[in-house]
Length: 136
Image 1 (cartoon, rainbow, N blue to C red):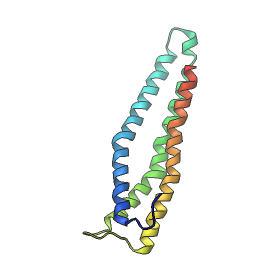
Image 2 (cartoon, rainbow, N blue to C red):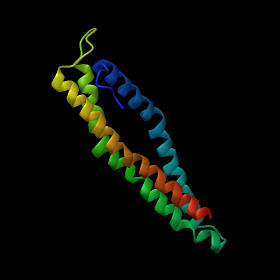
Image 3 (cartoon, rainbow, N blue to C red):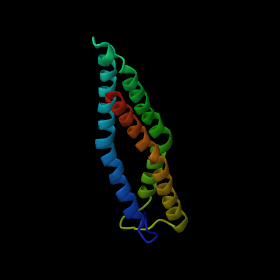
Image 4 (cartoon, rainbow, N blue to C red):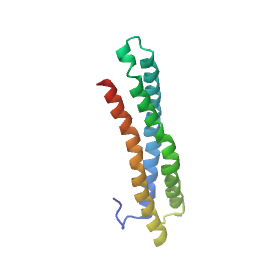
């Protein structure tokens, strides 16, 4: 929750840090997870034990679900990131506040980001559940 009295500069700087860390850790870990799921799908498909090989579809479904996060981020989340960063760049020198309409728009962007960010969480949670189901 962002308090209405939080300066615009603080909001944009914190948001930029969230974006930076997300890019550093989350995107790279999602890529590694996607590669691991794809490899697991292929290796399971070719496994000599039929009961093991029959579970390849679960891993393929998990992989297919996880890669949906890529386009979802590009379409729904990254444009909000870009807009928020652009608003932070409007602040000059030691200026702490955007104009009232811009500050309200920044709050709207943060609410929108939280709402759309939920899809990223689901896109990572569902493949985990599918993988767990394959292991059971």
